[in-house]
Image (cartoon, rainbow, N blue to C red):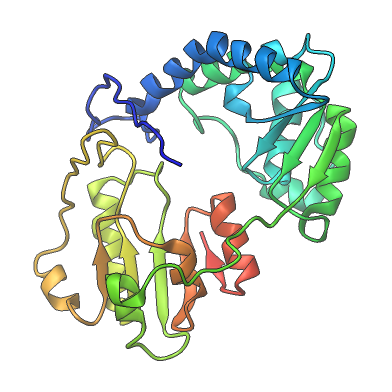
Length: 300
């Protein structure tokens, strides 16, 4: 199976943007709104040939798949790639409902103020009305991990809630250790001795934050793999990236003892490696799931 990759006109990343969110991704979101008609045509065609049609889609595709609702033999389910806890709290806060959590846990909830720019809020608002047509939600979690919050979300949403996670590759050895610099380096390290550092693809740090983190890591004497791919530092269409500025001599001093990676890195394989003893992360849900299932401590 092959896929034709399409290129879209997009502004380059703004390295000095005040917003931490990668707004140069916005054109991709806008393009998804144009998919309604071709998706509708496809659904009508396949519905006429099928006894039952199940459509599973991302929340951000709710507008584009809205025409599934008139099809009598069709159902749609949203696949959520964030934690049920986050989804429940966000649903309550955005709808003005009270969050039914213990007092101590409520005190630890961070404010959503400034969590996302207006462009993202507007896109979410556009999708929200079309969520009403869905039959239920599918989550990358389990009742063992989030059973309490699944029950609470079901009360808020009044939809079927299905926990089918954790969703992870069955095998992690499809990448040869000999062909990947991260895994080659890990093979030479003692068990549980390396801290893996990665903050996802939609997180951006200021130069000052990177400098301070670099100084702290060096002073800790801790072995680490630090993946530096960031949202507004990398142009997803051209692959162009901006090289970070570290403390003077930092890269030379850590060379061989620690590993800096500016390209894609096989995160599941790194976290699962016997030499990895900890994970410093932005704590996106996929990273949390990998940390939990592979029994590697994670810190935010």
